[in-house]
Amino acid sequence: NFMLTQPHSVLESPGKTVTISCTRSSGSIASNSVQWYQQRPGSSPSTVIYENYQRPSGVSDRFSGSIDRSSNSASLIISGIKTEDEADYYCQSYDSNNVIFGGGTRLTVL
Amino acid sequence: EVQLVESGGGLLQPGGSLRLSCEVSGFIFRSYAMSWVRQAPGKGLEWVSVITDSGDDTKSADSVRGRFIISRDNSKNTLYLQMNSLRDEDTAVYYCAKGVGSSYPQSRVIDYWGQGTLVTVSS
Image (cartoon, rainbow over all chains, first blue to last red):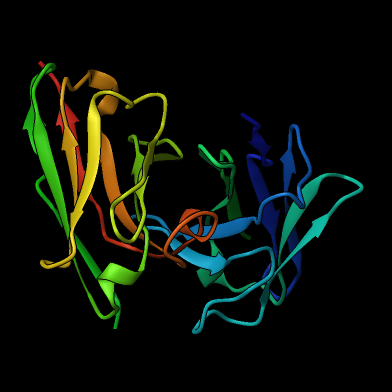
């Protein structure tokens, strides 16, 4: 099994852009798609990015996703940050036998 | 509107059994894979099990394999998780989640989540 490593926390100000990384420990990041889930305090998770860069209907276009083969990582980019974006963000990928989540990143909007 | 509503959580002792249910609406249940994901208090998300659209293939995490069984009844639009030989470390909120497709690999991609049901295992 591989692991997905995320920073524990990031801080940013309203209106700015933040990038949250998700690094795969072994195997290529491009082998299996990466998803991103948002979990606001006291709420269940919701999907903000799936299949690397696809956005579900209803999700703001301020959210975007990408993968970088050179660093073997995926990224969630949130532009024009709002206070409502303050939440935990989890990346996720998989192989044929498992589904793997990153440890989560707490985004604090200053 | 897609809705996933879990039920069946509660407090029980180690070694006990419990069955969770997830009733869905707003999409064609029999056409999509489904998963269970859990979250221990103050911790991150942990995948538990996945089942294909027809129910003919399932996968489970090492931590629950042999103790938990995922199943579905497509005539009732309902997903189940039978939990046996429960341990303290199974204490968590259990979420039902919908896959974007019917089988691998799209079964591993989640687009909708339920609100969760709390399972507490304690003596």
